[in-house]
Length: 490
Image (tube, rainbow, N blue to C red; front, top):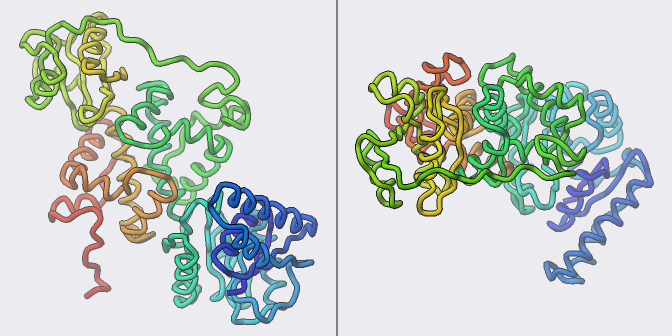
């Protein structure tokens, strides 16, 4: 295939390297001609590095470089061009002007693809004489390493083009997921579940960013916590994405933006690139606190599985001691009131954390400080780490996973992507240990429904309202990953 790559900045040169490595001839062009030469040199340096690390041979690197064809301008005639991939400035007018020129000089058989991350594909296509030839191909940076591409048809995109470009992506070494032309497409949309819920937890002073991040990593198995991720991406970028997707879905409660971000963006607390964000990259961040309580103090739990876990770790399990209450979508305070538990020495323990080496302890305003320290010490037996959080419905890990699954279920419910593509896109694009719908299936659809229903009832916030997708599958005994039967099937 002969591909014309227009725009040779960071993203464009990455896509060009990926396509040339897959065996395609790649024309490189840019409105700034010198950028083309810079891109070719950059790709050559990447290939030389790969040779030095033994990832490719010198002969293969030379062959890849020879498939790069510099052009003097994006609008050169090209009767043999099969596919155009555009990665220019995120501006509708700029893209419209470019595609209008390409329509004049390239054959009608050439497929046009835009790498936009924020502009609606249909709006770009509407500026063309033939809007059916344009499709979205959303790559992620760095394009050669992020092995996932969103294929986004516009309203008029021909179905055969969607199939062709999907096959092209897969044959070239990346996975392709087909996504409806909606705000944030799939991966950026799905990623709001983690980040917006983390910000909501911070708004409520449930825990500090470092504590939430530790729970996200150690209990949920994420590679990075949500605040670490925002600092890496840049809060200025993340804030725009959060606001645009929330606004694009007409201020849906499930995607609600936080009031915490605008002032931090204005103050320049963008993350790693500015030296300070949620963390200080120029100084030292506070280390995790030490546990100073009495680990020999007797503990008890109304839940047999918690008692077994405590005993296995070497705790003294006896009635009349500290009470550790597992909650699922509810609060420790409600358990104290409902079960008549001693308010000064009753604490919450997240059942999700019991299967990990980090225990999560929840305290209430009525907690005795000495008893809380002793509870933390008991939970640390066996070499476990302990995070202490403020009592809230479900706790940190449950609320994060409920939001992750809830946003993904809403994406499936609205037909934005298939269940399989949702899980594939999230695992490849966001690095989650498992896709959000498969994650829900590990917990169980009925248990997810119970969690979300309890959060909705306890917190009174519509952001936790269970989706029809989760509710129906729990009622029918179907997995969350099942597409199920639709009217069109009948």
